[in-house]
Length: 72
Image (cartoon, rainbow, N blue to C red; front, side, top):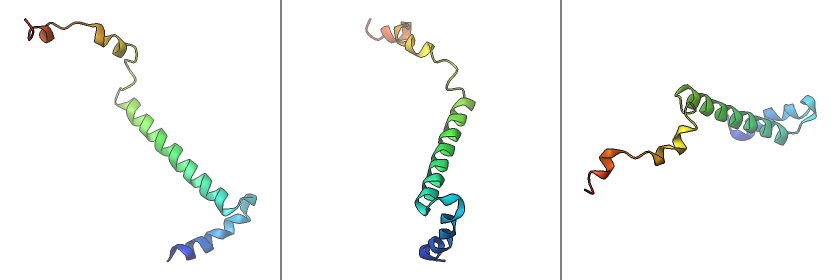
């Protein structure tokens, strides 16, 4: 089945809810992008990347002894 045949068969959606084919394509793309963003967020939440959001900004102020031994 070629792309043109699929688009011709897809054209019946124009009468459904009064949306044109461009409207349906926009809805499909929007749903796909928001679904992908949801799965990326869920994966980051599941791996614990949002657990310590305050500690990261103070990490640069903590002096570690091992770093300064090289310069002594």
